[in-house]
Length: 46
Image (cartoon, rainbow, N blue to C red):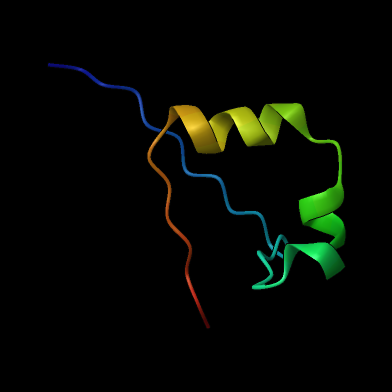
């Protein structure tokens, strides 16, 4: 079975614990938002 996989590394694309003060959480990014809702995803902490 062949499945396609994509690895997206969004360096600097942080998710804030307080979305009210996060420019990324307040930005109009419908494509990125659709990826979060349609596909499995994970966040790495460094």
